[in-house]
Length: 445
Image (cartoon, rainbow, N blue to C red; front, side, top):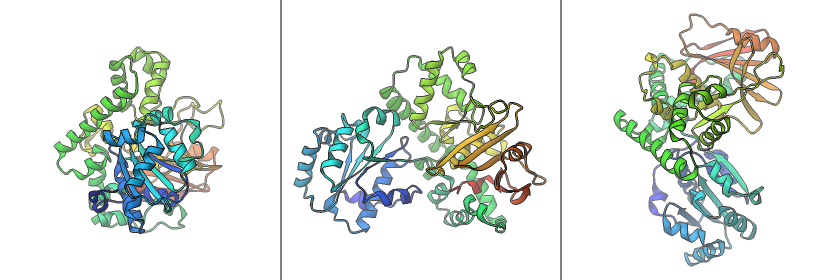
């Protein structure tokens, strides 16, 4: 049964929710993955509230938190023991039963439980969460192919951040300026009135300093924000890293995280890192994979078609939350005063481009051996969307030289330049180039 506190809890919506809802009546188990504290549990609550609003009987909804030992023991006893327990609780197996399982990676054999329930109890729908892709891959075997659908849950986008800050009007404004919409328009809508611009810039500053973890966004006291961020990172280090992985050199690992935080948006030179940290290349790759699989960093690969002229090996690296990145460096100064503000905004752009990717999309960067560069290339089949970040005051809007080089080789119908405050459009050859302030990219999708 679902506790009353879950049924009645007031919750902010999340942008991933509409993608999940169409799968509630399909047979596959739904697995929501993401780092600690990004809101996976609250997503389960939102789904429960949605089903209750659809008049699903409360007796057919069950929630299990596997950090509670009694819940963990019950599910570890196997599917038949679970089914028997549900019957005793009053579940009607002539109707659809919904099982919500939080932190499923704690089970001894999650594959066996999910496979048997999906195959032999088609009326039982499973929606579960997990905090480590590596642990899930280790425990979820090939037997679950075709039996599960994965959804990645991120910390808040800037658009969601505005909702959590009760900035309803600003959130509605950004809805009207989604990049995907602007690219389809022959003429851009009028620029925003000045009364919106200052609060958006101020909120962008807060987001780039403290990140998008829901608890951090909801906390107004800056000192408490730092304490909460430190708690999130400490839990990550002591629970996810220490319990899931064997780290031979903790000092090198911690140094690596600091070096990566300094290098966001830069080419990742593995030879330099192994020399600086005095570790082997396999150890470096192991640590990078650990950081990716626990949702701290993400690497993107270069776009190339001309191997002799374009960089094809070294990736670029970004953090998936800027608050954690700044915590690692202990740097929380105001955005406008920081020498790394350009890198922060590029990382901000990455976060929103990456989370906005659809099934057939890829995200790359482009760089030639002569150092011509475009920060991001969104690729959908043969369609390319180059995006450059220029977070500075522009006296006039001009197409950056790197983008000019890219468009001369790969003609595109559209391109975008992310700026500090410039808004408008112009054409470069056949391409429509849109210039927009960084806070408008917070509604990419």
